[in-house]
Image 1: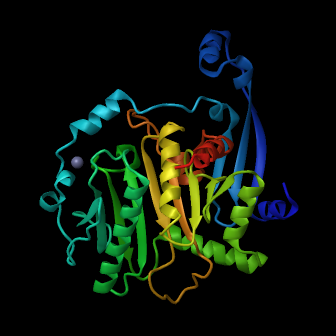
Image 2 (image 1 turned 45 degrees about the vertical axis):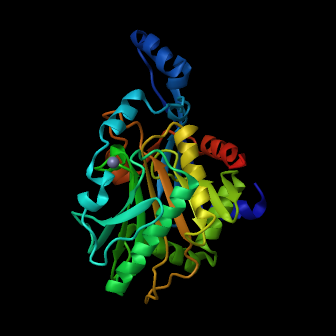
Image 3 (image 1 turned 30 degrees about the vertical axis):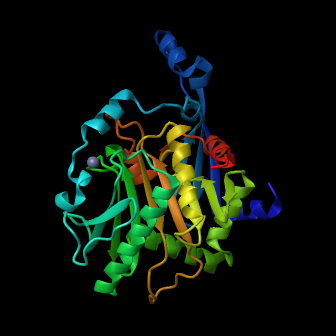
Length: 348
Ligand SMILES: [Zn+2]
């Protein structure tokens, strides 16, 4: 690793490695060989614990879990479930969903609605024309981002204090989406940004005060130094070292316009078609839409995308560790960046 990247890495991350041992009874040997390949593989296991010292995000990586094959594909059952839900309220949004007080924002491939059960005063939907939530193009994503942003500006007109805009996209029920039909959600909140985003702002500020260094630059340099980042037309795409759950990817840009739609499209395409994801969460953290009392200087647009596991599996990917301690991660960020590099090397 180059010296400056190593310094960034050491300022920001703590890594510890430990080894676990176990003694399986002979009666288990056959099952273990079938599932993990060999007895040796489970008898000694290396666990790597990574902690981001600025944000206190952490992750536990187990080599054994990471070595399991990653590939899976959208099963016939899943496609059938998606197709069977055609005809839902989002297929005819102007009849099936309420409008906001300022009406609807229309794009080329999407239209907004007011969320019927709100979690904030301004909480809307960007409903995609395309029913299947896993089918989209770069053009579609550009449209969804633009429509969401125009919705936020409408909300800001109605309530100039609702300055904190949040864009989120849950795809399929594993991610929390209650309706299968493709849609993103948008919210504008007041007084303070949502807790996680405000936490990141404060962490970055405290980091700058404590170290004299820019948090986001160090984050990028540390990932670059490890070979976990790539550049795409001014965007930085990283396989996150402390992922919130499987295969998390961060995209850092200076705004919502190009190159962000192209970067998001390629990341999602890679997750869905190379890394076996079919349910995901995507969010965009960004500075507020208007001046605020608190300091947002140097805060970029941070897009986070995470794989939420097989929609046909009944097991939740989030347990007590994820909710209350530290995420346990099966995917290896070095394999994630490899797949991303292959995807981004393609011409379109
Ligand atoms: Zn539909």
